[in-house]
Image (tube, rainbow, N blue to C red):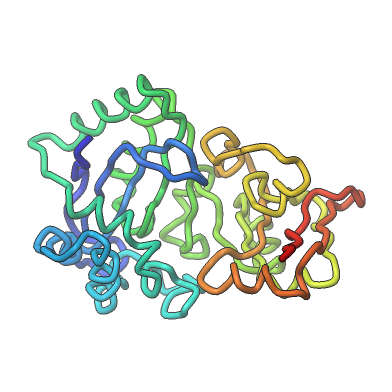
Length: 289
């Protein structure tokens, strides 16, 4: 199904023109999700003008985003400007939002088109709205993100929603719907003290020698480390823990650029992850030659 543009206008972050596009999507990790991508309008235009091989579109997206990312990613994002940011540095990961932008079309009535897409998603077996494939919900006007979420909920769709700008006073309207995206236990504890659910990506080296989750935290059931113990093919659309309305605290070993290699190191092989009661809930894979 062709991606549709559901918002085109100024960013809440810096006033620059941005777009939000939506399509039926997902991947092997998330399962079937209704995906929202928020991007600078200039990047959308660049993707639609791109005439090279499809495999190179992600690289073109990364290049086009370098000077315009401030409109769709808050200054508080700890990944911004670093190699850990896939949107700025990982052309392969950027391929999905780049394709969505390249194929997106405008409609006469974005709200009506969105409601129709939500109903189509629900009838097609989709269970979750994903905010966002790239970019941030915080860049959208509050009234727009409001109807995006309410229409999806009316169609029976749950949420996978994360926010990098949760500390900002301008993002507090997303508390209760989005998970605070945090990169440390200390950061997660602070977010939770402010009323946010948290998705915490902990650097892989911190798990070396064994790791015990803080009280109240759950290892992401979809993570490779959790699957080493439970052995189940869990996807995000079936899980549903990453919904900010549920006040959950999800912890996962970081999975950005370079982390796959770190997990394969001898130091990490077979390392166990335990919950606060001492039960083994995850294990780094042991690689045999």
